[in-house]
View: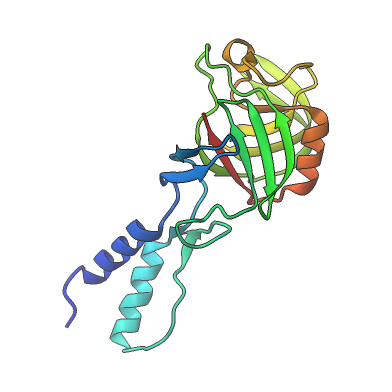
Length: 206
């Protein structure tokens, strides 16, 4: 006889142990230190309802089998170290972006992120490229900007070229930053757009 709620508790414990969406992660930044990155949309998330249904049936039928959990969302890697060695790193403190493939640095570029003096600072977190589009008009309350390459990573925050800028990096973001997006020099953006795939983790921090 199974105690009432035992399966639900088991699945909830499993999710607490292995879900990584929004988790706090330790990340080795290119600038040479370990940073703590919290929040974001990237990661693994177990489908608890489906798992409870499966385990309830399996228990009733006395099944013995190896079972892979159902997920609402999967990262590129399972387990707690789910970022892996291919990712985009957005270091907003240094105003630099890096793209690594299998641990090898392929792109390094200065960027301009969200304007912190106007409270539009780009949010920290581990997100992922969820769409790729070319020739897009980005619209906000008081602007409409054409970009050649658009890779959103969290809601309407994304990585794109910015033809209206002739300087990137440094302290620009503090007073003349974006509305939250990651403005990138066109040449670097074109290369990143060609190489990065949908699903690529994007690690964002100050």
